[in-house]
Length: 505
Image (cartoon, rainbow, N blue to C red; front, side, top):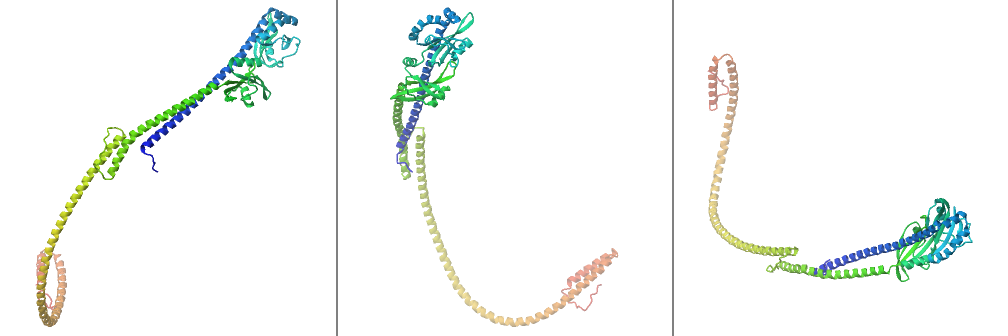
């Protein structure tokens, strides 16, 4: 089916569509790249907040361990632990705890005896003597391995940041001292204030999870399956909206002091800046694509005009040539491209057509001259033939007259011949009788000849026998043979009687 669009418009539309497809692909590719960049930026920033959280926990743990180490290194502490003097420890550290609780966020301050028995809770002096070994593994490890143990661990008061340091005197292990720093809502609020990131802790509770605390007001962008994967060590990042604000959320693992999973921590940050950057990138890419499309359309139109103008001109010339107008002028082209080659080819075609037309005219003229000469030759031949026929007719007419006279003469001769034939017939009858007589004589002559031949054969046999008797009789036999030959030669003309025997002399 022929397109209703002209060549110029088809080229322009093709280039415009190609440019549009290229721009669309470029925009989509750019958006995909920008989205990937934003995703990686979100992940990188969220991971930095996550690492900051772990660093903050580790920092608090080491601060608690430092405080515990100071207490464990005091001689008064060692002396009181060696004597199991609880009152001395209360008098020594009771006033200190009140100041450190409000100033440094200390929630717990207690001493233990091996393996994990509560010797003194400075924050709660009336409660002591209970065994903590079933759930306070930091205390057990510190007393068994005689080493400093720091990190997150649950307790009677809940999850806290622990710093447990062993107490020894003169190389003798006496027990351990522990500072437990705040790890609750105040810690989470402080983290949000410093990092400008919402946070929520989801602690494992058997097969499920429960919210330990956070700043998201009970909201979450993940489900229980995501919590389970995060507790196993996986990280999940999602983009969503908190009310009308675009956010990016990360869910990562939370581990205790020994590296065992405690649950999952959810970090949510404002993603409006990245979304705005992506929107600006979208608008910029679309604007660039639209500008590129317009430029492509303009350039395509110019290219199409540059291509179609000479092609349309050549097409007009070819149409004129097809209609038989060979005097049409072929436009000159100095271009070395395909259009220039086409113009040159059309010029060659026009010249060939002109030459062919001249050749046809020459052939027609030659044919006309040849036919005239043929007509003249045929006329001359016809005249000659007519003259020849006229002569022949005259001759035949004369011959016919002569033949008529001859026929009359022959008729007379026939009559004479008929009379002579009758006479000849009578003579023929007589001759026939004579011929019969001659035939009888000839038959007798033939019989004589046969007899002569028989006798000659007998003589030859006799002569052969005589030749065998000697050479001397050979000449005689030869002469006899010659005589016999001569006799045989002359015998047909002689009349020999068959009853008379032949005698050799």
